[in-house]
Length: 227
Image 1 (cartoon, helix red, strand yellow):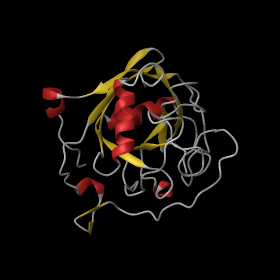
Image 2 (cartoon, rainbow, N blue to C red):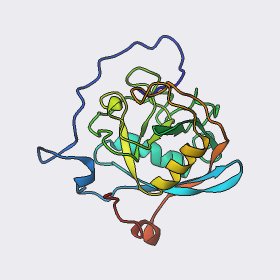
Image 3 (cartoon, rainbow, N blue to C red):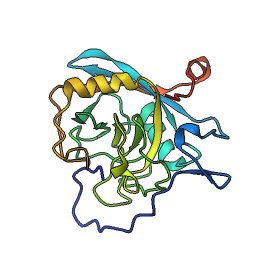
Image 4 (cartoon, one colour):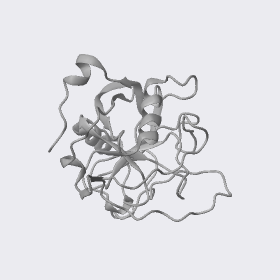
């Protein structure tokens, strides 16, 4: 489970059984799923040590995890007001070959943040599996139903996160950017690829310089990633 330091006193709750998300009762991998709604698409522009490092475009599973997807979208646009935006926040943790994590809108160090619904947000479901690189999901406090604003992006398959962390979207453009940043600024994975949260921190400063939602022609210029 990918987690961050959180206030004491939270009790562990039972996790739901992990499932692939289903469409008309048919279990299907996320890359082959054809949505019946127009999913939101958001972008993150990164800097590395103050210099432009590239951008990513993320398509959110709004029909699978509508509340979590809306939480991420609003944190990208900043429309909920001061203190609820990913803009100018740090990527606090990067682990070689595994993931990057950020979104601490309060402290910037991976131990704070909050959702647009309040300090903590429930897990909607675990229907999105981490079978591919480029999955975006929510970081919790180490127990279910403790999501805030922090998120992760995987750079390799991470099945050990299934049933523990809520996947909310995937990268349709810029996965190479994330992999390069993690390779340059990441720390070693001391778990041997078996767990999240075992290596923390970063060797270089990476920041989300700007972010937002894509609409109109900008939305349409990207096609769903299938590779």
